[in-house]
Amino acid sequence: MIGPVTTRREGGAAWVTINRPEAANALDQPTKDGILAALEQAAADPSARVVALTGTGRAFCAGQDLRELQGSRASGEIDLGDALKTFYEPAVRLLAEMPKPTVAVVNGVAAGAGASLALACDLRVAAASARFKLAFSGIALIPDAGSTWHLPRLVGLSNALRLALLDDTVGAEEARRIGLVSRVWPDEELADRAGELIARLAAGPTGAHAAAKRLLRASLEADLPTALAAEAKAQAAAASSADHAEGVSAFVAKRAPAFTGS
Ligand code: LHQ
Image 1 (spheres, rainbow, N blue to C red):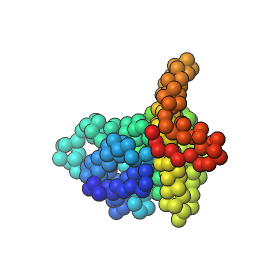
Image 2 (image 1 turned 30 degrees about the vertical axis):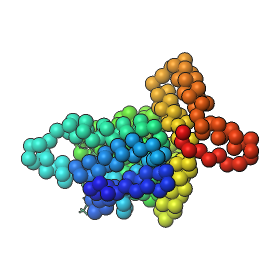
Image 3 (image 1 turned 60 degrees about the horizontal axis):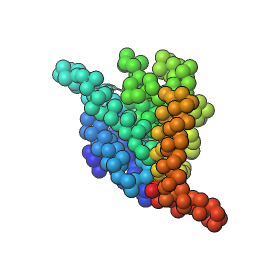
Image 4 (image 1 turned 180 degrees about the horizontal axis):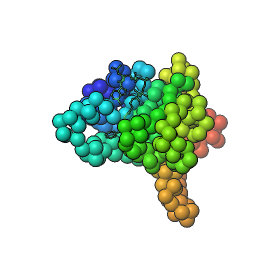
């Protein structure tokens, strides 16, 4: 437990749960501190081979706590740029860049920077009742915490502009259709099904997953020769890993591989 954020381990999976259901898991300072500490811990721990981010109750996360924001405005202590630099940017970069898969288990509404955190994860899986709402334009702000970067890459510029300018609420099924989430399950099945998917990732070839994640993300900024060169370098490293030897042995012996992440 780090403030209102619960951390738990299930085998090789590190679960980070935002635990402020009374405020739709909105991000006040203790919650932001808790998330960042939990992500830093999980990123640095080689025995954590996948990181899952979720919320308690009816919401995934409603973004910046607007009551706290209003308090800061009233006391003249407001610097949104500072808030972005000290929490949102490092949290988004950890989710996007840590060398292991990250998964948002979207149990309910994801709004504002709560949606941004989900977008920064490598995968999003959702309950059927979950929904996404950028919400920024409702308070005359721009999509932040990486949303202007992740959203067009995930759903294309047209959908990104629609979500930013019209502030449409996107339900789980539509989110799946436009590529925002990978799986949608009935609410009552989310915990079990997401648990299975995350356990599968935790038992996967973590080094290969980390390299695939890094190269796929980098490819969006790279030309083909650069991407090919990066693949060749990463593949040489993957080919000398214990997990690669195990994968090949397991295939030949017609058994399931037992990857260790090394
Ligand atoms: C909340 C919040 C909330 C506090 C629901 N704060 N209490 C901004 C500035 C600084 C730096 C960096 O970046 C950002 C990024 C941002 O995140 S800006 C966007 C901030 N988020 C929003 O504008 C979303 C505001 N919330 C909503 O639109 C709705 O509450 C959603 C769509 C999330 C959920 O709607 P419902 O399912 O109808 O639930 P609700 O509205 O009844 O909310 C439940 C409770 O949670 C309620 O408390 P109450 O005591 O009245 O029952 C809300 O006040 C509270 N809550 N969001 N962001």
